Image (cartoon, rainbow, N blue to C red; front, side, top):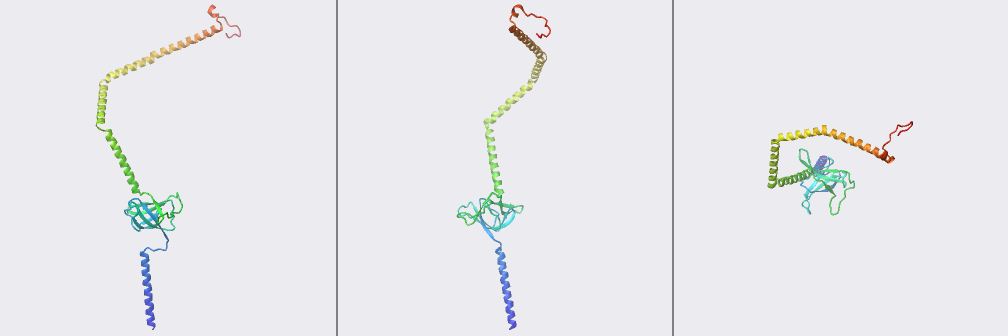
Length: 260
């Protein structure tokens, strides 16, 4: 009887151990955890090539969750609906935004969450939405594509402008202008000696004007100034003593204490 009891205990122990191992395997394979997660939705307006289920979700570079599902939005097929599970303690707010990012040289695509702290209100479920929706920001690939597209457009406009500028008529006018410029240059070269003589003569005339004419003119102006001063004095004396016009100026020696 004792032997039968031992076999029963051993069998029960083996069955319980096997069941625990099976439960552990199921637990680990299904990704179950004691940590609490919150589900959010992201609507991508660009290609999510390289992103897959279980791709990492990071908040400021720290892993906080995984991608749960990826599918086209039923109402708007141009949008890709990405559902993610994030740790409950992650501070997701109205100011949080998601960007599709590639990790270095490995090329692994993941979702990067960032928050500038502009709006710290908690993110809530909006009407007709199953999960709270995190807004998105264009990835670096989209930004580069936009810049390159705009650059190409601007370069094409510049090219078209040059083509319009250098049409047949404008090219002919430019050719004619260059020909006239060449003719003028040739004429200047041929008549360079005459031009030098004219410049030399002009320089001599300027020198004569500076050395001879200007000093003489200055002296003449000075004489005119002296004459004007004399006339002013005579006019003042006539106003003070009109009899001067009849008997002339009577000059007499000044007495003691006289100034005039």
